[in-house]
Length: 308
Image 1 (cartoon, helix red, strand yellow):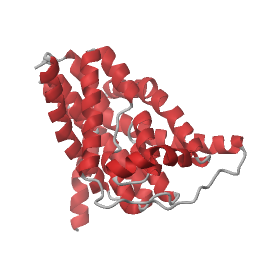
Image 2: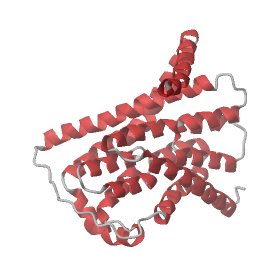
Image 3: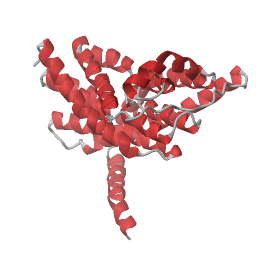
């Protein structure tokens, strides 16, 4: 009975969405096409190549090289061995939800332990730098984009340092170099990348459209943007360009959208980590903590360069 009561709100929301779609098909189609456009022009180019390349690097033992290069730094600063640097570096280059993807992959291949994976899950939530320095920079200017970049990235590293394991974690793993032909390995990497991107596409379209339905009767543009950013960070960020608010307020909102990730990203992460039974709570608490830290950093940067 209790389980049925829990599903009632979901059923009601889905029915509202269904009736809205039947009554406003043109508006829904417009939102879907807009979501597809965002995915094709902003998400897919930045993610597909990096996902495929990183999968190949894992299979060909590139972790061993990173272990040798970054072992000392990661041991001293974060109390983890250098092999985990692959997860951190590639999550920065690829953008979310790649941190969850690589963490889950490493756990699946027994390259890291579960406690280590949960720790990585809390802070390897990075927006793709191409999105910040490209899309955000073009719309809002280079200075604003730079502050967002610093606030977002630095907040995650500060969080990682604060919650680092008390004792050094030494990962014990075997180097499994890929023995299949390159063409076979490449095809497998394409398949793995496509699965993640299909999940990202589905969530982007669903929450992009859902946020439009929920805000269809709201007149206040700022409130609409905040709700949109809560559901889908990309739509929230893009919607701010036509609102008459200060640059500093825009920086805080954009940084908040990126740091929290939006419900769309949270659903993607939950689905990715489910395979290895990782604890979603670590990710959620990491996003809330990172959001608070990033706002403080953005305010400091704003005072420093005179935006406030």
